[in-house]
Image 1: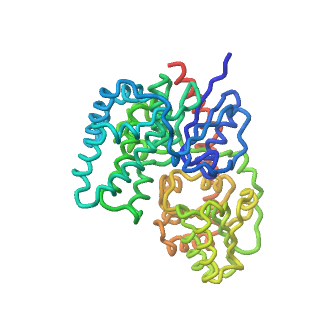
Image 2: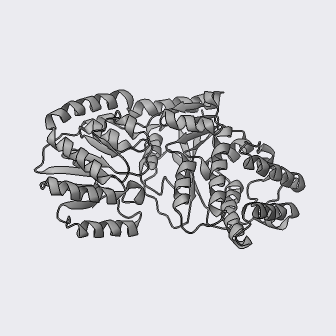
Image 3: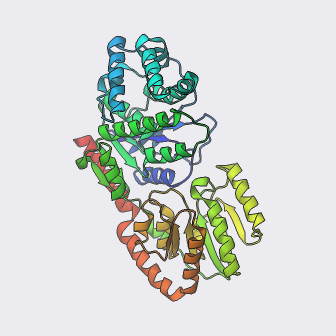
Length: 463
């Protein structure tokens, strides 16, 4: 019998970027050797290198680079009719309703890129001008046009791309990956499984609102594009999964069907992390496991370390994770450590075997400004390490809403007080460690959770 083949559609993650989502994909593939996997990765440029050794059951990998201008080798079917449908589709987007794009995506075949048609057809150019007059009356037309071109060229590239053949298309986000899965579902009549670890459109909106290079309608245009891509993904997915109920409710508010939306939390290799042999090391050791990038807010960790050191002189700090993903940010962090005179007691370790650190850490810290359901908390719990974290994503629920261990983002003083509390109450922490280990074993065993995905795959191909 021919093995089941699943195509993972991935945007800006596996196999080029390390981190929670990529690790989840890699582990799930390795856990299902009986299933063939194809990778369809969506990348910002073509100079990326693999950060993972692909498992043997990855049988194909195609990469589409969004920054490349694609060449058209096919024509649009029924161009006048299709352009009129696209015009109606935009009216639906403006009213926040969900259009049926089946005919449009069928007529816009693979290897057809719509930019030339959009700019050179009378209907397309009239739409561009009309929306500029409506939404961008103060600024120059060029501002609107180049924002339109950037956002729509990426959409055209996705719709013109050819993904690997598969029995199921499994997108690990909405956005452009979700759009590719919608197109595959329509064109090949194959099921579409959507997994969200965070909420793509919310994450992009946060980034856009911080961007200083956007002006006029440009920011609103990008936000509308990302919201529309999410709405399409929810509307067309056969099943969508989220990590916790709050995110599921947001999916429902944007068009997901209640019967199709399920919660499947992240899991870890409980046996592996529970096998850690804890040993007390001289001093008091505080660690952060994560990439040195702005979203992890390493600078707040450094500030907190300065506060802690002033109260607990024997404290030592370990930033455990890759430092090469944002070199400029890493250099800022190094200079910050130097300015606080922490160089002798604060170490950037780079990539390490985290089990060696879980063996002696007294506290695991998470200072992120955005997370979904961070695996490092579960790993620390299984290994017997207390956790202090910012209130992001599902973290408050994971920490039982216990204010002894929670702080708002950027609140270095509150994080420091919580770490000091752990230092001052070692006996009390032993009870917490025991409860946390039991919770992880009961709720977050990845073997149980991966089996849930195995069952979802089977359900999708038998329906």
